[in-house]
Image (cartoon, rainbow, N blue to C red):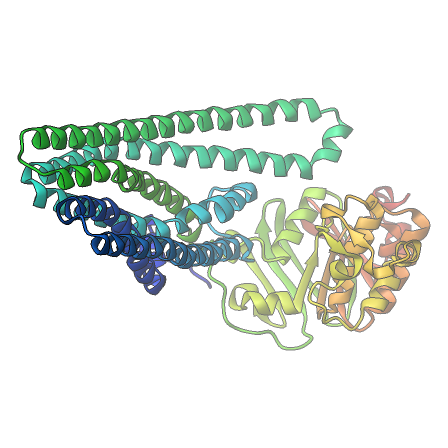
Length: 566
């Protein structure tokens, strides 16, 4: 019996540390280059002040030429260091975001469900926006360090001119960061809530698209639209709130930075007027007061991005840290073998017990649709083995003992609402491109008319969810995919409900012929499929109540005749 995975959950801090650790090299080089860029930016007004001082003192053309050359070197350094530094960081950022997208998507697509209260639309948002924002930490840290370098260089240069100017920059920067740290925490919590609401709106859209046709059928589309408008409005209002908080943060940062720059300029002017610093130092101080605005802006914005990255990492942790509902086994079933359902109790199933011998074609006529759905879910391993009583055995081994890969390779359950993917008919029938029975599967499922209808044949383009196909065409395409898999045990759940009676008759005969010698179970009420089965099991009130051929049951069981005769 399998047991749940009890590994320690991965918190947001672990995700961020992993991202930083994996990109150490890129971040080191990025930090060096961006630090060089910020140092060059800060060196420009320092050099300008020195040029003014020495040129006025010496009045030499040689000194002037040397100063211009020094400025050219500084400008070149600033340009190249920025270009290559950002190239390194953005490449690392993009690569890391891709890694997390793949990881989150892998968790969401695992055959074994995870114990997480999120819909597919929410997981999609986490795999895209949250992954991108988490990876931004790779750029944030080098920019934060390089901005700090610029502030320190400016403070040291001003301190050498006059200690009061250096202290003013240091104390002012500390005060600015203290004020903005409070606002950054608000941004983090607001962003997390916004992402959650956007994800819920996305999940609602996915649900509506899936159920649009039945919603139109019973007139529920207006109520569904109102429901979506409600969650969408909530997401919009939260986005406005986040925008307001971001605006307040940016405005406060800009105002505080301007106040500090103004204070440095006025202080330098007063010191120059009082004769405590010379003209060159005044030019340097005024220039630094202007240039320091940019690193101060970056330095003050970085905490905001850190909080956003942390909020997104916390949402990713909801998926990555969620334990699997069950841990699959590692065994593999033998080739062939029986399919045994031994006293299974789950949902509407009550001590369900039957055996399908290897190579047999068995039809199950379920009087209650819910019982058919519960049986299909158990056979598809969508229900953890510890969630139902009894056992399901494939070739003598319980499902819980088998690996997911082994179950999928040996036993295929094709649901009645199989998904159709954007691509072509061929890629929908044979997604891996390895099947050798595609022509036979197309013919058996009576998909030949769809292939012949289009000039491109099997390469005819299919839209997402099969939007350009009819209901019957989508169902036959799903059946062709199941037949092309050519697995040892195939379970089909209502494979012909959307096709006409003549086509259904042909499909039944074709499937029986193609699957001869392979174990096949069809959960259906179709007389055509019931008639070609070796035997029929009647599933009523969650248990097998009768067993015989279709024609014998029609002749001797009035309830069966009433349930399946058309």
